Image 1 (cartoon, rainbow, N blue to C red):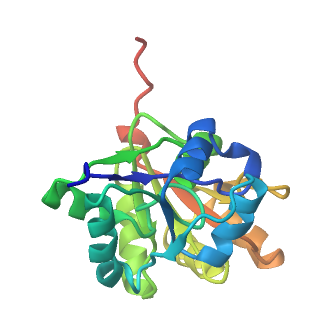
Image 2 (spheres, helix red, strand yellow):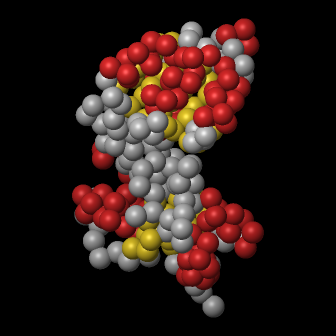
Image 3 (cartoon, rainbow, N blue to C red):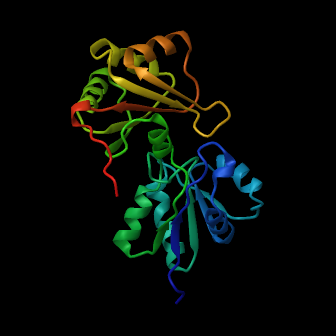
Length: 236
C-alpha cells in the first residue's frame, strides 16, 4: 500500500503576479495534480511560472462536496494535491474549507502555506487599529441585515473587514452615512494592482466621493470600531 499523500493549500497573488512565494512555486511544480477554483483562471499563472502538462481539476463551491471524495482517495494513494483559488488564501471566502475539514476528519495530512491575503493587506494599509480585528466576508445583500452588521462593527473594538461588490458599495456607504455620517471608513481597491487606491474618511465623505466617481474593481471595505474601546499596541 502506498504511503498517504497530502493536500497543500497554496495562496496565489491577489493582483501582482510577483507576489507568489518561492515555496508556492516549488509546491505547484512538484504536486501530482492541482485543484483549482477555476482552471481557466489558474492556467495563465501556471504558464507564467513555467508549469505545463500538470493535471488540473476544478474544485469550486458548486462541486467541492461531490469532487472531494475522489481527491481524498488520490491523496490516500500517495498523491500530493495542491489547492489554489482564483486569488489569495484558499478557504477565505473561497473553496478550501471542506478540504481542510475532510483532512482533519479522515486523518489526511495537509499543509497551509503563508502568502498573499487581501484581508491583511487592506487592514495594514487602512491605517486602522490592528491590535484587534475581524473579517466578516461579504456583507449581506438585504439592507436591514447589512445595516445591523455595519452598526455592530461601529460598537466593536478594533477594525471590521468586509469584501464588497463595486456595484453595491455606494448603497452600503449610503446606508451607513444615513445613520452614522461620521463613521470612520476605508475603501481599499484593486490591491497590489496598477490602480490600487485607499480611500479613507467618514462614511459621508466616502459616499459623496463614490457617488461622483463610480467604484470599480475588487474592493475591501473597512470600518474602525468604537474609539473608546481602542487602545494603542503595547510595546514588546
